[in-house]
Image (cartoon, rainbow, N blue to C red; front, side):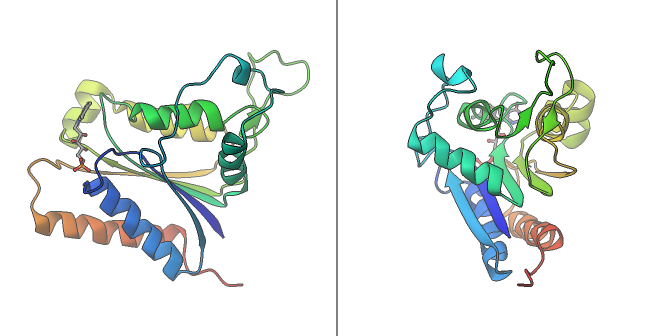
Length: 200
Ligand SMILES: Cc1cc2nc3c(=O)[nH]c(=O)nc-3n(C[C@H](O)[C@H](O)[C@H](O)COP(=O)(O)O)c2cc1C
């Protein structure tokens, strides 16, 4: 299967990078084809321009490639830190520019955009790995865990994905090496569970 990994963290040595690398290793070990997109190192431009807002506009070759990968992916893995209850801007921009009408969703004829769209993504499963410095109880009770609603309801259910799983690792800032190794083991297990060895 084709699996798209999206990583959004500016520091190469971050735990987020370790998560994404681990996920890619497991996928390759299970004979999947991996599209690995490290959005910061690729200097992805997150700004959606006025012309690009038009569904029929002529997209750059680069954005066309990102769109093709998203449309063709049988699964998607997203890795990013919690920044103000949101993804880093570079990843928000990937959502804005790549999950376009005609690629990720479309409205039925006669629907001006106010109705419920038809999701177009082929991905059967999306896995989201987040890191955070807020204990889970406080994240839910004080902040309402906005990332959970964002990824599951606002984005991937909207685009037609049925299975969406999210795992949050934290508190990162006080974690030991042993704890982080155990978390990477959980990443291995989750990726293996949702994207097991591919039988040709
Ligand atoms: C701009 C910015 C905003 C952040 N906002 C939050 C936040 O709202 N909640 C939270 O728990 N942590 C927040 N953090 C902390 C990051 O989530 C934390 O540094 C990251 O998850 C650690 O992962 P890493 O070791 O891979 O860098 C923020 C960090 C930055 C730089």
